[in-house]
Length: 477
Image 1 (cartoon, rainbow, N blue to C red):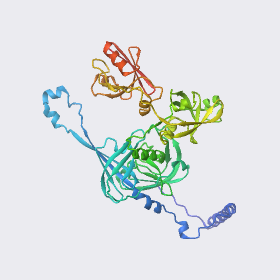
Image 2 (tube, rainbow, N blue to C red):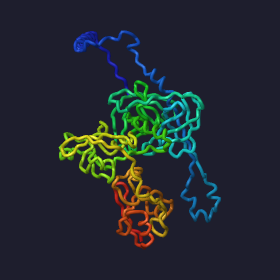
Image 3 (cartoon, rainbow, N blue to C red):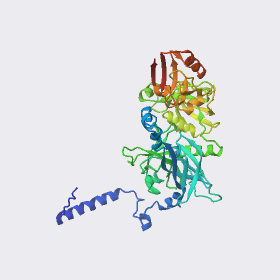
Image 4 (cartoon, rainbow, N blue to C red):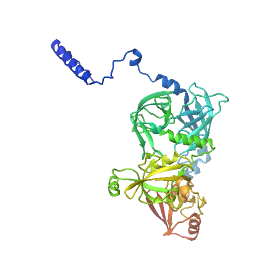
């Protein structure tokens, strides 16, 4: 690329200077009376250094390590075993070590750290490296895959570690300046700055309780679990993911709001290994522009209820299918992810105020959130041999189970919780989370009925499975 340079003639320079002075005078006349030239060097110089100095010591590096077995496609092949015997298997490397790098935030001076679930998922060893380079082994107190959050504990004796104060992420506004602190690509602790680009981002496929803060502060691999802080030096989010086609930052990063971080701390204080999910007992879908016109809403907003579970808090409060939940405790709701996020920030047994559109008018409904009932019993067990579903462990679906696996409250059937590798079910393509709906045109209500049908039925088998929004039918002869 060439740099083009041109010099200005004397007359041209004088003309340009005069024009600039006139424009500057006009602009100055339009400035508010409060605008003033900076009166000191300190007024001109701006730096985030004081904020970083306070916050960086509370952000740590998290290293996880796990050992996995190598599996060769020829390792158990009878042909290779025949000619090479067990020496072929023994010659193959049996194990390899996988390392993962992320970040974490100290939220209690005794050594309690919050990070992302995906940073420590499957780890057999976890090491936390403090800002001063000291290393500690960490134990997992809580790991919640659906929230993508985890709580770790390191033993620092009687020492008091620096912590980050938690701010209310609901007070953030689009355009606010924020700092992202973490360890991108393992280069060492790094600070980047940007603004809040958007709030309450949902539907990203990052988690079932997603309502993310979007920022253009550079977030890269290794930043996961690190801190997103405001200009008061307070934690407003846990850096979690980026949108990128190259693997590097393109200015679209996402952080989990501190509302869920508080829920994790509350669960840890109670000795829980998962964050308890308050249950409202509704299924719904976001209001489209067409639906808004039919409902008489001024614009598309809210979650239109499609189903209300019997005996649920929503049912007890008089909510019915067709009602639209506009807000929970004053916070707008636009879809199921947003509702789940807002409910997860509230505790079981706490009251919630719902703003509901009903029959063309707005009303306020108060509900007390409860835990989803774990009935009927799950009865998780292995299915009998001698059929295409051999190798499956399945359980009865109930509201609590449905909540855990992110299925609608009105979902029915038997859910697959495990599939043995190499089994008939695995060869058929059955996966964890599949719902077994029918066997030979018989609807499946529970595990006991499924076992009975599998024992009594014979080939050919017609099996109907549901996976997400899709239904599959397999005929096995």
